[in-house]
Image 1 (cartoon, helix red, strand yellow):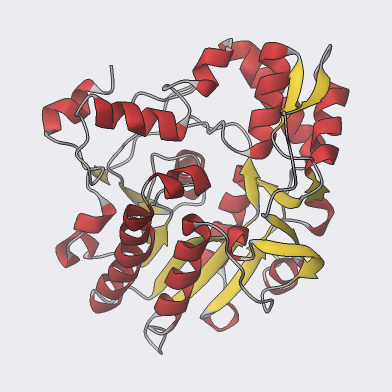
Image 2 (cartoon, rainbow, N blue to C red):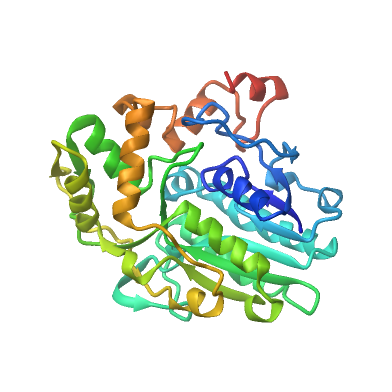
Length: 350
């Protein structure tokens, strides 16, 4: 298939590109490349791409594609809180507009990167795709609204699918340190502390980014009738953990570290335990390969190889919100998070 992958230079996209190519797909990317100066370790697999903000896509950009895999957006809760209106504009309105343009262009498959953040304050009960939404952040709400609006576009010629991924972890050329397991291992490696900002009691499902990519590929290959206008929780039932349990796994693997709770740490409103049985029942091609222990080992090895220091992941290089704030403060981005001029976007690579 000829596939348009939005957000191909992001945390998940940089891992998905080579996996799609290995399956024989022709892949074109679309990304404004906000994190051009945040590459971690090895480089990014080059593909033809459109250097464009997802809000600025035109129908001509979509000509000749069989499917759109839509990853692009503000990627987490702190970024969503930076400017809730922008989160709504980029994550919701632009996503729905992209889906409408894809439908008008005759693209039959639209796979949306949603999130288990949709469930938000879900409590201790097991949640399925039929469970009520209860988002507690602008990010989570943007995903809910996009699912609801894009779902209405489904018909005989346009088939959307919604992949609600668990909290991602794992090594990527555009590594994120704001994700729970990546962050805990980074703190353990650089400081000897496994630093918990909550009391450790909230449930959180986790999934490796390579397994998220496997889910997208499985949907892309699946018969239309089994994925049409369907939502799938992406992960494994065994990979629902309380945050403190993840900390204990990190402590068992990273030497000479101890667990410490932030002063005044309390429960996190984001608490959800997610049932992921449906995707493995409906999509037999989806075979997740990772678990938390193996993920910690991968992260720890990568941090050693690159020589990560605390200032890297708590500063402007790899911390998403600090990086964007720096681009705003230095006037390389305007207030809408668009590059001011092309030359400034290029200079950010250095």
